[in-house]
Length: 413
Image 1 (spheres, helix red, strand yellow):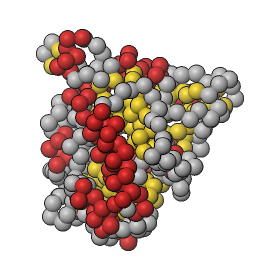
Image 2 (image 1 turned 60 degrees about the vertical axis):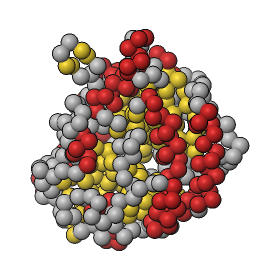
Image 3 (image 1 turned 180 degrees about the horizontal axis):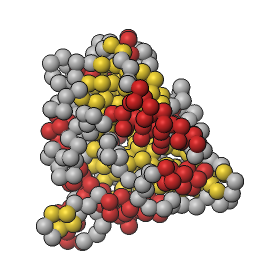
């Protein structure tokens, strides 16, 4: 258990006096409001895909990771799919609009940015946290100027139900935070419409992907979600972190400068879980300088370019790979080689070394054509407790930046 009143954040990223002043105030108000007692671990994450892409995305997930479909429901506007990895780890909820003309605020945000327009409804929506009472959560947070969705506010009524509530899109991350006060596995209690069954052809695509993963020996090596990383603008880093810590019982673990990429990596974690995969870390990445100032220095800025090209949004979801070897090959190297043979494209080679001391090995896939999310695979060797090394993050950020460039006129960013 972390004592936020005495904990000293890790890292070399210098925070402003504003952040240093308000971080303990956020912790104190959160405790006083009762939020820490009402809200628990992460129950799930929510991803929306474009109309017609859900089955292909579920097959991609079955090939690349541990999530498997366990239930499907039909609402007035969406098909809703519930996926599970291990019982103690958060669920993955995938939604797909029923109509190709479906539009809500996600659509409108995506259409503002040049590289997200092709999939205007595809987006990581946000995390869902377990709560004793969604009404108690609203009662605690609304006086703190956190806005919640109410009936009639949104086209998708998933965001406002008796036992499931979501905040408005954050002005800093364009993500939501959700809270659920019944078992997320019980879609009947959530009132998420009637159960439906995929066609034999649709189910066959998902089953074939899972069988291919097992055939290549990947099944069982890729565990649950390790962390999710949002990219935001340089000037909004501290605001985004403090806002998130206002809404969930996490703490600011620390922040590190990645000078080679002119950015910082900022990590928030749950203070009371024996395994981070039970409530994965939330990471915020931002440029050290905004683009218009950086033009004086001409430093790399793939993080800010991503935001300018795709908008503030989730950049990647990371899966933990169990530490060990397959014959004489590290598990993550084996997993990546096998996924490559199955057709999964990656941005670069695995970075990092795992020899005799604790360390990390990591890699990014190319972004999914369905969710627009990169998948990271990360193996912590010899009990390594951190989330990255500077060298690893620099290499991964550079590789992603090359793949996320926008060509307009004679400018490439």
